[in-house]
Image (tube, rainbow, N blue to C red):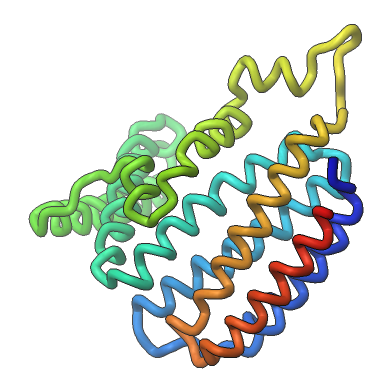
Length: 239
């Protein structure tokens, strides 16, 4: 079994290496490039959150952060190859917003506050308008399994379902996290889970940063060389 502390040290050094490129990058002046950059930054921040949980003896909660990293990576992979995916992302956002705002507007507490109620109604109207506009253009809800497959991450769907269990307080997950002869609280996850989450997180973060040349001024050849260094550092940590 790999040494988790050794893995964490390597993960931190790899993140520092990634940050040098993130902080240097000048994003291409386009809506698609900015969306891609936002995804890359979010994935990098979620990586930090993952390692923070593991370093603070809450490793059984790390999958909660790895799950959106995988979702974000799927969007990023698709977006850098297909600019029209931005419309799918906009549709998903508007559809979710419309549903949320319309439901919030039914709350009695919200209706008693005229200012808040008016703001929620306005937000709902904008979301509904955007959702319906994109729906007329042919956009429809996209299943996560289909998105992962389109992104070339179809083999990750089984892992994604496992991550969902940890995110949604699945009964079996709760049992693994807390059950025993005595109830476990702030108890470390099995080492196999922690090493697995770290490995997935490192892979997703490096993959996101390696795509920087597709939406910024970072040279492709420089990123390729950095990828070799980061992969080597991680392989050494697993040895």
